[in-house]
Each structure stands twice: as structure tokens, then as C-alpha cells.
Image 1 (cartoon, rainbow, N blue to C red):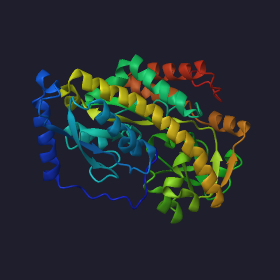
Image 2 (tube, helix red, strand yellow):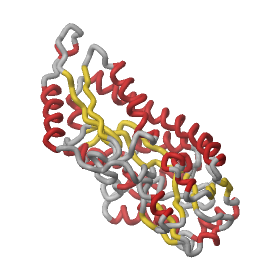
Image 3 (cartoon, one colour):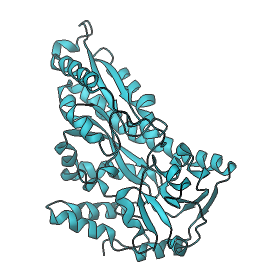
Image 4 (cartoon, rainbow, N blue to C red):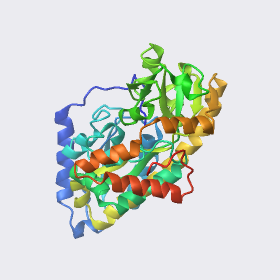
Length: 370
């Protein structure tokens, strides 16, 4: 996921006002009963506070307004009435703090970018630890759901934070976006490259220098020389005008990635009537599919528009991709062993994901299970 404009607002909302909204929501939810389901019953509004560290310019946030909320309201009409209080762009919860906001009741519902919360969601880094996987967003999205359904430890990670995962946030194939052309792995030598924390390992042994960052920081950082480029999902280049400061976009087959989730506070969810819970669950899965469709379409739109404005698109050859994969340590196995040592299910998750990729016909440049 990469991340927003550096000009996105970051000031905190008044905590007293936020907490009063949560109290209203909790009071209304506590009053739900079978009688509440009758259409004739006077409905108390249930207020849900919605947050994201990213702004709505990015599809995973924008779809909350354009799809999730309208669908929930349409499908629960006559059963429950919602009032939505929205706080996007880090106005309440910055990147890396989203899960805390929803867990503690500062918010109730929204996006958790677990790519920036690896300490709380180690297993959710599963695709990020298998570079050069599938470039198909649909495959990665579907596998993220299937693995969460099959492996209890993945769901448990959300439950331990008081959250329930409803939908997957998957972004398109990560690319190199740089101030300089990249035709080979050797072109990265000595270059400073912005990366979200968990994928800094993708640059090990490449002689490039990983610099921690996110979409909120890339533009200004590259413009001022903090870095020479970034590894970012290509559809998100346009949202922060990254092509203006780094016009070389190189497809390297690094793969589409599961980077976060649409979640709800578990206690809030459990207060809903069963059929309302089912609506949230179904809409969450449909959100995942909608995101794949919109983000996939955006890739081509961004390429077209950015090219008009001077961006130059190229692809790293298969031989150079294989060379890159081979110089890396065995990242999935190393990551899995670290989690296993803490009693986690790292090896089981890696094995399940890599085997699932192979079953999909994905040609990995290296067998990560050996």
C-alpha cells in the first residue's frame, strides 16, 4: 500500500467529541433486540466512526464511500439505521496506528494497513515475504481470503487486536519508480530506494540502499534527494504524482501484495443482529473483488496518463528478475523461522502460500521452499 500525499492532514480530532460518538454508538447497539428488527419499531441510529491513515484518493479507502457504506445501508434498510462519521487521511489514526484506533473504540470500522503494523500482524506479511510472486491481483486477493479461512492463526491475529477482518486490501504489481533508468540489477548499485518497512529485505545483496518510507513521504523525499526512487504499486503512482519526480517506471515482476484489510471492532460487530452481521461479512468479501477490479483498471489508466506527462515505462528482463531473486537470502524461509521460534505458524503459512501460488500456475523465479 503504499500511502498518500505528503500534504494530507495529520492533526488529531478532538478526543472528547470522538468518544461521545462512540458512547452514542454503544448505547444504541446495547438496545438492539428482536423487536428492533420489526420495521415499525422506532429506530435509534447506530453511529459508526470510520478511519483510515490513507486518503480517499486511493481505491481501498474510496470504495468505503462509493461501495461499502451504500451497500450496507441498502441491505440493512428497515433493520438498523446507521450514522457514519468519517475520518480519513490520518486525521484520527495515522498509518501504523489504525488498529489501535479501532481496537480501543476511538473508531469502529475502517482500514488497517498491516504492512505498517508488522509487529502486531506478523503472519499478515505472508505475501510481502515472497517477492516475485503472482502479479495478478485477483489471485493474491483470493488466496489471502482462502488462507485466512484455512489457517486459524491468521484470523487469531486480528482477534487478538479486538478486530474482525471483513475484506482484503491487495495492491497491484510492485514496480521500481526511479529518477534513473533501470535495465539491470546492476543499475541499482549505490542507489537509495524508498520502501515500506517489511519489504526492505527485497533489496538485500542488491547493493541498493533501502530507505523507510510510504506514499505520504515519497514525493518530497525523492524531490529533495532523500532517495532516488521507490518500490511502489504502479497504480498508485498517479495519486501522489510520483512520475513528476521519478519518471522511470520499471516493471520487475515483484508481485501484487496483500497489504491490509477492511476491519470492524469485534465487540461492535458482535452486538449486531445475525442478519446484519451477515451483511457486513458479504459486503466485505465483495469489497475485495471491487478493489481488484478498480485497481486493475487504474493500472492502465495511470500508465496512459503518466506516459503523456513524460513517464517512461520499461520491463526488467526475465533473466534480470531471476538474478535479483537468486541474490536474495531465502526470505520466506528466514521469516518463517523467526516466527516459528516465537511459537507462531510461519512455516505453515509460507508453505501454504507458495504451494497455492504454484497451484495457480505462477512461475516463481526461485523455489522458496528449498
